[in-house]
Image (cartoon, rainbow, N blue to C red; front, side):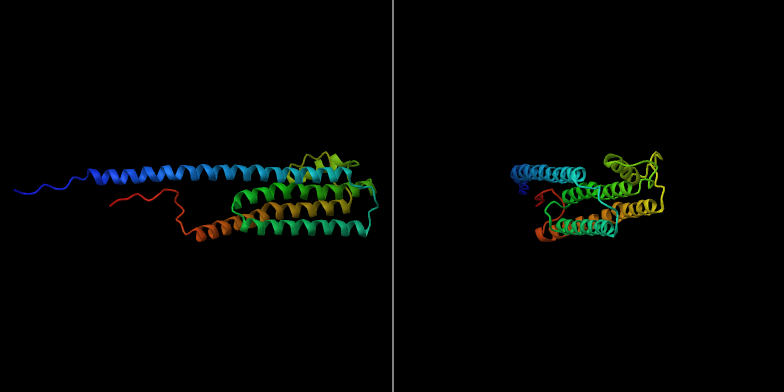
Length: 216
Protein backbone atom coordinates (compact mmCIF):
# COMPACT_ATOMS: atom_id res chain seq x y z
CA UNK A 1 0.00 0.00 0.00
CA UNK A 2 1.40 3.36 -1.02
CA UNK A 3 1.99 5.74 1.91
CA UNK A 4 0.01 8.95 1.92
CA UNK A 5 1.69 12.38 1.59
CA UNK A 6 2.26 14.35 4.76
CA UNK A 7 -0.38 17.02 5.34
CA UNK A 8 0.66 20.60 4.75
CA UNK A 9 -1.75 22.14 7.20
CA UNK A 10 0.65 22.55 10.17
CA UNK A 11 3.29 24.11 7.93
CA UNK A 12 0.82 26.62 6.63
CA UNK A 13 -0.27 27.40 10.17
CA UNK A 14 3.33 28.01 11.23
CA UNK A 15 3.81 30.49 8.38
CA UNK A 16 0.55 32.24 9.18
CA UNK A 17 1.43 32.38 12.86
CA UNK A 18 4.84 33.87 12.00
CA UNK A 19 3.32 36.60 9.88
CA UNK A 20 0.73 37.45 12.51
CA UNK A 21 3.36 37.46 15.23
CA UNK A 22 5.51 39.76 13.11
CA UNK A 23 2.58 42.12 12.61
CA UNK A 24 1.89 42.17 16.33
CA UNK A 25 5.51 42.92 17.09
CA UNK A 26 5.63 45.58 14.42
CA UNK A 27 2.57 47.53 15.57
CA UNK A 28 4.15 48.90 18.79
CA UNK A 29 7.24 49.95 16.85
CA UNK A 30 5.12 51.73 14.25
CA UNK A 31 3.06 53.45 16.95
CA UNK A 32 6.21 54.55 18.77
CA UNK A 33 7.71 55.84 15.51
CA UNK A 34 4.51 57.78 14.81
CA UNK A 35 4.62 59.38 18.26
CA UNK A 36 8.25 60.39 17.82
CA UNK A 37 7.50 61.87 14.39
CA UNK A 38 4.59 63.79 15.84
CA UNK A 39 6.74 65.26 18.58
CA UNK A 40 9.37 66.17 16.02
CA UNK A 41 6.73 67.83 13.85
CA UNK A 42 5.43 69.94 16.72
CA UNK A 43 8.96 70.90 17.72
CA UNK A 44 9.81 71.85 14.14
CA UNK A 45 6.69 74.00 13.79
CA UNK A 46 7.43 75.67 17.13
CA UNK A 47 11.03 76.49 16.16
CA UNK A 48 10.02 77.91 12.78
CA UNK A 49 7.21 79.97 14.30
CA UNK A 50 9.44 81.42 17.00
CA UNK A 51 12.14 82.34 14.46
CA UNK A 52 9.64 84.05 12.15
CA UNK A 53 7.89 85.93 14.97
CA UNK A 54 11.18 87.14 16.41
CA UNK A 55 12.33 88.31 12.97
CA UNK A 56 9.12 90.28 12.45
CA UNK A 57 9.31 91.83 15.94
CA UNK A 58 12.93 92.86 15.38
CA UNK A 59 11.98 94.30 11.99
CA UNK A 60 9.27 96.53 13.46
CA UNK A 61 11.33 97.58 16.49
CA UNK A 62 14.74 98.08 14.87
CA UNK A 63 15.84 101.72 14.28
CA UNK A 64 15.60 102.07 10.50
CA UNK A 65 15.72 105.88 10.42
CA UNK A 66 19.51 106.22 10.16
CA UNK A 67 21.25 107.74 7.20
CA UNK A 68 21.91 105.88 3.99
CA UNK A 69 25.66 105.59 3.48
CA UNK A 70 28.36 103.06 2.79
CA UNK A 71 27.88 101.64 6.27
CA UNK A 72 24.26 100.84 5.49
CA UNK A 73 25.26 99.03 2.29
CA UNK A 74 27.87 97.05 4.22
CA UNK A 75 25.29 96.16 6.86
CA UNK A 76 22.93 94.86 4.16
CA UNK A 77 25.74 92.83 2.57
CA UNK A 78 26.75 91.40 5.96
CA UNK A 79 23.13 90.47 6.66
CA UNK A 80 22.92 88.56 3.38
CA UNK A 81 26.24 86.80 4.09
CA UNK A 82 25.04 85.80 7.56
CA UNK A 83 21.79 84.60 6.05
CA UNK A 84 23.72 82.47 3.56
CA UNK A 85 25.85 81.08 6.38
CA UNK A 86 22.77 80.10 8.39
CA UNK A 87 21.30 78.37 5.33
CA UNK A 88 24.53 76.42 4.78
CA UNK A 89 24.55 75.38 8.44
CA UNK A 90 20.92 74.28 8.13
CA UNK A 91 21.72 72.23 5.02
CA UNK A 92 24.48 70.43 6.93
CA UNK A 93 21.98 69.77 9.71
CA UNK A 94 19.62 68.22 7.16
CA UNK A 95 22.26 65.70 6.08
CA UNK A 96 22.75 64.61 9.71
CA UNK A 97 19.12 64.63 10.79
CA UNK A 98 17.06 61.53 11.50
CA UNK A 99 14.14 63.33 9.85
CA UNK A 100 15.77 65.07 6.85
CA UNK A 101 12.55 65.95 5.02
CA UNK A 102 11.07 67.62 8.08
CA UNK A 103 14.33 69.47 8.70
CA UNK A 104 14.43 70.70 5.10
CA UNK A 105 10.87 72.02 5.31
CA UNK A 106 11.75 73.76 8.57
CA UNK A 107 14.75 75.39 6.91
CA UNK A 108 12.68 76.77 4.04
CA UNK A 109 9.90 77.92 6.38
CA UNK A 110 12.42 79.81 8.51
CA UNK A 111 14.78 81.14 5.84
CA UNK A 112 12.10 82.51 3.52
CA UNK A 113 10.55 85.07 5.91
CA UNK A 114 13.97 86.16 7.22
CA UNK A 115 15.13 86.71 3.65
CA UNK A 116 12.08 88.88 2.91
CA UNK A 117 12.57 90.93 6.08
CA UNK A 118 16.18 91.73 5.16
CA UNK A 119 15.11 93.31 1.86
CA UNK A 120 12.13 95.00 3.50
CA UNK A 121 14.50 96.77 5.87
CA UNK A 122 16.63 97.84 2.91
CA UNK A 123 13.59 99.33 1.17
CA UNK A 124 12.56 101.20 4.32
CA UNK A 125 16.03 102.72 4.69
CA UNK A 126 16.09 103.70 1.03
CA UNK A 127 12.66 105.29 1.15
CA UNK A 128 13.42 107.18 4.38
CA UNK A 129 16.60 108.71 2.99
CA UNK A 130 15.50 109.20 -0.61
CA UNK A 131 11.81 109.99 -0.65
CA UNK A 132 11.56 109.76 -4.43
CA UNK A 133 13.02 106.24 -4.60
CA UNK A 134 9.58 104.68 -4.99
CA UNK A 135 6.25 105.83 -6.32
CA UNK A 136 5.25 106.49 -2.70
CA UNK A 137 7.00 106.72 0.65
CA UNK A 138 7.29 103.28 2.18
CA UNK A 139 6.56 102.47 5.76
CA UNK A 140 7.59 99.16 7.27
CA UNK A 141 4.38 97.38 6.30
CA UNK A 142 4.47 98.94 2.83
CA UNK A 143 8.05 97.76 2.34
CA UNK A 144 7.19 94.25 3.50
CA UNK A 145 4.21 94.22 1.13
CA UNK A 146 6.38 95.34 -1.78
CA UNK A 147 9.02 92.72 -0.95
CA UNK A 148 6.43 89.94 -0.94
CA UNK A 149 4.94 91.08 -4.27
CA UNK A 150 8.40 91.06 -5.86
CA UNK A 151 9.14 87.65 -4.39
CA UNK A 152 5.82 86.25 -5.61
CA UNK A 153 6.27 87.97 -9.04
CA UNK A 154 2.74 89.35 -8.72
CA UNK A 155 3.59 92.87 -9.85
CA UNK A 156 0.46 94.81 -8.89
CA UNK A 157 2.13 98.05 -9.95
CA UNK A 158 0.79 100.14 -7.07
CA UNK A 159 4.35 100.50 -5.69
CA UNK A 160 7.20 100.78 -8.18
CA UNK A 161 10.92 101.65 -7.91
CA UNK A 162 11.63 105.01 -9.53
CA UNK A 163 15.28 105.91 -8.98
CA UNK A 164 18.26 103.96 -10.23
CA UNK A 165 19.28 102.90 -6.73
CA UNK A 166 15.83 101.56 -5.93
CA UNK A 167 15.75 99.61 -9.17
CA UNK A 168 19.18 98.14 -8.54
CA UNK A 169 18.14 96.94 -5.06
CA UNK A 170 14.91 95.52 -6.51
CA UNK A 171 16.83 93.68 -9.22
CA UNK A 172 19.15 92.31 -6.55
CA UNK A 173 16.15 90.91 -4.73
CA UNK A 174 14.81 89.37 -7.96
CA UNK A 175 18.11 87.56 -8.54
CA UNK A 176 18.27 86.49 -4.90
CA UNK A 177 14.70 85.18 -5.21
CA UNK A 178 15.78 82.91 -8.04
CA UNK A 179 18.68 81.63 -5.94
CA UNK A 180 16.49 81.08 -2.88
CA UNK A 181 13.66 79.32 -4.69
CA UNK A 182 15.76 77.36 -7.15
CA UNK A 183 19.26 76.65 -5.93
CA UNK A 184 18.60 76.40 -2.19
CA UNK A 185 15.55 74.20 -2.71
CA UNK A 186 17.57 71.93 -5.00
CA UNK A 187 20.45 71.75 -2.53
CA UNK A 188 18.06 70.91 0.29
CA UNK A 189 16.55 68.13 -1.81
CA UNK A 190 20.04 66.74 -2.40
CA UNK A 191 20.78 66.94 1.32
CA UNK A 192 17.60 64.99 2.06
CA UNK A 193 18.65 62.26 -0.35
CA UNK A 194 22.12 62.07 1.16
CA UNK A 195 20.66 61.72 4.66
CA UNK A 196 18.18 59.06 3.59
CA UNK A 197 20.85 57.06 1.74
CA UNK A 198 23.17 57.23 4.75
CA UNK A 199 20.39 56.13 7.09
CA UNK A 200 19.44 53.22 4.81
CA UNK A 201 23.07 52.11 4.54
CA UNK A 202 23.53 52.31 8.31
CA UNK A 203 20.41 50.30 9.11
CA UNK A 204 21.29 47.52 6.68
CA UNK A 205 17.60 46.92 6.00
CA UNK A 206 15.77 47.00 2.67
CA UNK A 207 13.53 50.01 2.06
CA UNK A 208 10.40 47.86 2.10
CA UNK A 209 8.38 48.06 5.32
CA UNK A 210 6.98 44.53 5.01
CA UNK A 211 8.32 41.73 7.23
CA UNK A 212 9.62 38.63 5.45
CA UNK A 213 7.10 35.80 5.01
CA UNK A 214 8.22 32.22 5.55
CA UNK A 215 7.66 30.51 2.24
CA UNK A 216 9.28 27.21 3.24
